[in-house]
Image (cartoon, rainbow, N blue to C red; front, side, top):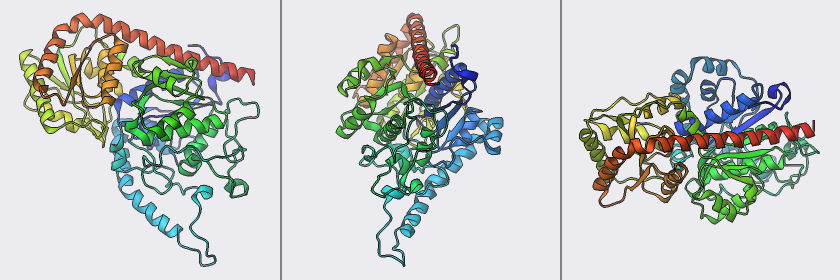
Length: 534
């Protein structure tokens, strides 16, 4: 990739809406790593901001990038001593401390905010006015970050780290998807008069509190709930919504958060793009309404599958010219871990979460089947961990399956996604209920037995099968004959693994090329617009 910006992007700020704010899912981290790599290849001197709840962990994984919280007072500030130390130490050292802080805050912050709100809502001794109107005053940020709870983490597949609303509670499904409050340009962050991207802060991005304008001017919800995100957007040159499966009925809070951010960026005149997206199922009428309002104005939406996404976007009124199918961006990272020969072991991961329920008997049946398969083929089991979020603890649900078997040690905590992909490369067959482990395997020519209990995961795995032209055998965890069906699937997949390998590798290469072509399109369009208005 070449470069078409002066000084290799110096002075430009690229904001990434990350799909998982605690950085505890290695699939999401893989997409993020590839996206950061592609941006740096093109614009090595551009500043990259990543939405997160842990700026120190962002610094540990991505030295030089800026971790931005939803309540940050100065989101694009230069890295301080803590960020520099985190970058030097790396995630293995920084991670446990960062996670302990996040968990502690998740427990204590809601209580502190409730106390604050009770004090704030007391009538003033000098007036009989009621509680302060949150529509005009906005929230009091909690030390530069949005709050979380353990319940929020379990709410949806990408909800780890989902910010709180202005009352300090997790964004509820009922309130997550309301459109931005009607505002004029006085309240919304303005773009330049000529409509070009902004490479620095919007000095005229006024709010009523800043300008003294009438309280009848209503502030956009993102400025009230997530002021740090709003400031980051107004100061950005480009906003990229990273891939994920969050625009779905299964993850309403995060869907609302991302749609709010994209709509706000569009209103501020900041270019936006979405990459690596997995969409649906989407039947919730409120979600569909919000998605239709926002996505129709996004000029580039790259999908990771064609099974559902294109048709869904068409039904929402998104122009076909804005939509393209690339495959998952994490494929590029997994491709780097390929071995020249096939693996010899059986990988296993069982995802159990609110959005992926698994009965105890089914969990036991999976364990029996994979242990029996290891004995039958004289091989070992590789327990694989992709998510370490409180709502999706793969370590806790997978390790019991391999007890008593010839099993490898799992990866440690706070490794890099490439380490997980490297462990997958040991396998001849993968048995998984986690989508991104399937991505890692197929990208290395390894066929997958996919475990599913919901339509959400049916679509994920069948979308992968379509993109890779095969290599996925779907097993439903509520099948009364689960044990027999799973054993047969593992046996057949083991037998077919060598035959499938070359085709899977070729499809992976095609998708990597498609993903890079889309980024090239994005970069060129941004550079063209910048040159026209320079």
